[in-house]
Length: 83
Length: 220
Image (tube, rainbow over the protein chains, first blue to last red):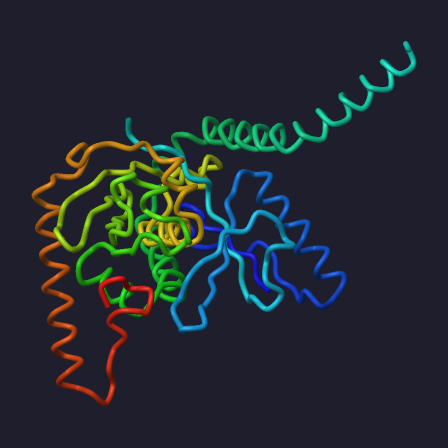
């Protein structure tokens, strides 16, 4: 599983990578995941529905991330634009 | 009694500490980034690198392509925006946008770094503009702006994953506040023509039919 973060001037940045089935890796992923949420990021998981259509799920904790997903994408939380 | 009050106070303080730590952490990071930006301000402005921005946009495009549906990906370079159907996150238009939208299919036009526009595809009626940004306050190169394609992908994921949350965070305006309604009407017309041409191409080449509309497409 890869944790990616969108950043200005970078495109996406790799935050962490590991196998969720390996205890040490999972711990590292959980820590990196929490850190991004604490920094105010939103997290989404790209998924494919049964009909084959691509969708996304917003996740608020590492436990909500499907074990089989290969990436979680972090992006800055939404803020209201021009008033 | 005093002991109980003291214990309660300690617990409350501990809980407050636990809750405020992430907030403090975030503020400190933003403060550090701002300080570094001020220190290197002149260098950062002078160091604007169009090549780096293009590379970032290229990477963002690859990420966008790998996440969205084939039809949406084809739409973006051709038209400059992506149409996303409402209702896909399970919320209804009646709940999210307006009580008048009971059962009516609606969609959003998503442009990079411009408001999201809700409209009714069947009539072309514009509903609202939702001004929303995804500012990265750490400003790695002096700007809070994500690459264009990342901005589109962030909106796509937020609308698909939790439409209500995004719409709640946005500032809502009547159409025309930031985007010219004539341009929007023209874009809706261009989208219709683009879809018809795509369908026509698919009919002529039945061996490799493109996915023009998914099952979630209310007008399919």
